[in-house]
Image (cartoon, rainbow over all chains, first blue to last red; front, side, top):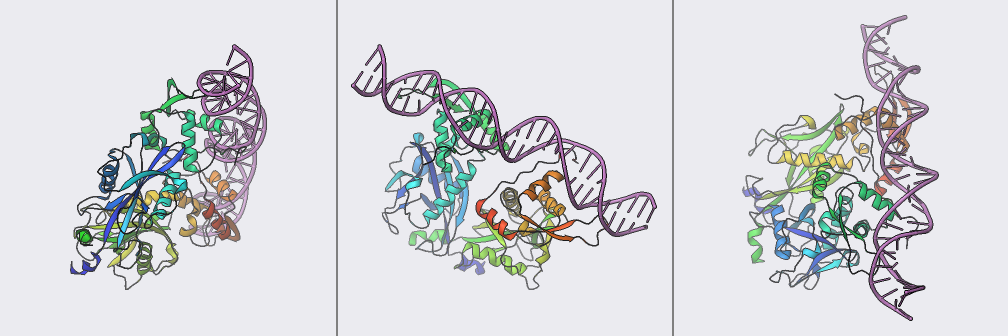
Length: 237
Length: 237
DNA sequence: GATAATTAGTGTATTTTTCACAACTACTCT
DNA sequence: AGAGTAGTTGTGAAAAATACACTAATTATC
């Protein structure tokens, strides 16, 4: 055991990239740091892992402390362990991403963070520590996941329109999709249920509302699938 | 800093799932443990990460100490941090897999391991610690990777036949592929170079030898691709 | 109350890819 | 020379992907 001593001078943390979708944009929940180091910078929510806590448990805890949300989709992405990544010592961090419906989210007042708020992924600049790198890795993983799992299920409100769903895919994949082909593909999967309701209060033709078919969703989770839709070739900007 | 103290009672290690391909089988390099705990059990090669060592560096080191191989493909897969996964304390481990050509491999005599040897993935039973779980995760990741990257490049000897390549895919994907469709697909990618040589000393019609086109391989790495071939429907056992 | 503005919704023809499938060839061993 | 073994090759049918543009339904405005 003595031989281990010098190794037991290290700690590990969990950082959580919490994705949401709103106003056609993919967003991430960031925290403004209230203390040194990187005081005043935006950072990913995270915390040291307790001595008798599993990694997944820590990730769930961090999410819940911040958002009060439970039963949220969580996935471990990658571990970052650069020697100098933390100014206070050797701290490696295990990065997770989670998917929440922004409509469900209520900022917890007693949060450990000075301030938390949603930021468009596209417009995020500098983050504390190596969090930019972590964010990039999680965005990449999400891009990959969206092709293999019905990710919208966790990101969209219970009722949504096909256009909203398409915008979600476009935001994640960072590309424009062809409307007709997208609809054809999505509807042919039988993953959506037509609610026989339409949007209200919009200044144009109202769209039909859909929800996810939970049963079908479970099936897809179990079996896996590949989702591919062509980009729109005609319009680009 | 004082508040960190109780967290700095932990260590982390890297474990390495070293894949090879031989005799039509996907293999893993395992070590027979010479000391407690799990003395006598087979385990994945791994080691604690040095205090001033990056994670990737540790993974490279472990691989090199054991096999003398450098410049090998390495990929971080997942971190395992169950509270009780190590009997001697809180040790989380970052799992990597690597791909080596078994023909290049020479057991290093002065290795820290009592014994190291190749085992068919399919026939591995119990491993020390939670290494069975780690192995499973790495096999799954490899299955996924083989559809997106020309994995054979790292696993096969410099010259190989189309049948060998097909067997590699079949071993990784754990399925049988249709011979004609496989060849059509692989050749249409222009990833292989016909060496204008044939096998020698085989008791049947000799096969042509191919090598990978390094340039084309780099292209595929950069752009990514999706490799899908249908299973053979007629023959199954 | 007509018209403008805005987004929703829909169909088809063409091309590409996947799929299923079997006969003949070239070599070695006995 | 005959048996054994693995290598090589093509095609037609079906399914999936792709490109593409107009009409429909609603509200806001004049």
